[in-house]
Image (cartoon, rainbow, N blue to C red; front, side, top):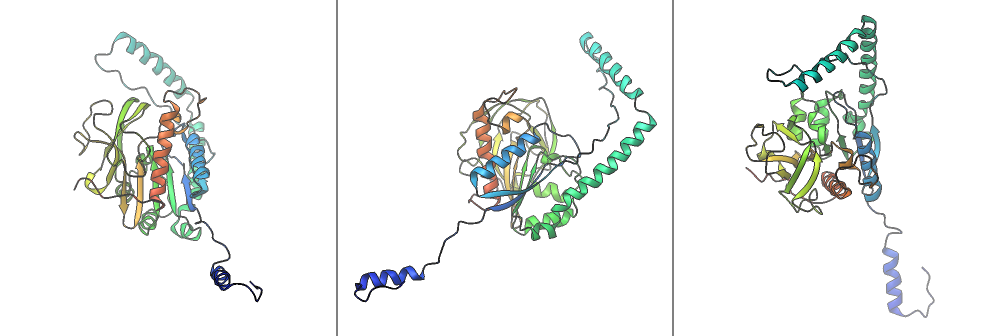
Length: 340
């Protein structure tokens, strides 16, 4: 900056300071995230709603961007018909009539399951498996490093996902990356102890959907901030867990009463976990068992068949956004277990 000779000394000094500043300042680059919605087990109808909601949160926060959705292969695999559940010895007449109807329908479907149909189903399954493996190859540690991915979200995944390098994926998280998971991601990779240990708990079953009042066990954590406790939900599918150890994680939301049917569950006694966070070496893990229903994810007032009011969905979005931000290192929060 060239100044006239007669310029006062204070202005000269001010201009000199300006010349030392960088030409421009840039906001931090948004974190790069991959979302996985592949299932090899039960597939939730809410998955497409979950994808839209996660994209909405990314767009609104501008702190993270979804680089890619790893979605379900398009191949449809015919499923062999399954018989209805056997009738209990004390079944009433209404139950017996329902069973007869269900069994007749089953026998009709079974008659159409010819060897030719079975061969077609086997071929379709092979194609599905190959396509799923190709899709999930994006989770290979080398690719995650190459693409500079900061975190991976499993949104309502199920089953034995064909990860290209299961142990390598856990090691990638341990190096300081984020793993975020919703609902049936705990019903995923049951045969891989490394995943279950990393996540912090494993799906053990559920009863009928029910209303539930949730209690924040760490109201200051980002995954609880902005949500009133108790948090009343009109209807949701609540999980029981096994391989869950409170001394290895920090509970965020919990139910202090049996979620549904009174079944005892491993190591839980009077405590029924709903959401938690934990550290996996240098990585951060956030999990919530909520997310079965579309009206948990989507806060649109005109959503069909809505039972939970939009306020419940808005609270859920705050919950998962806080968990995502925490796992990506965008905001502070403790992962210290409350119970040692």
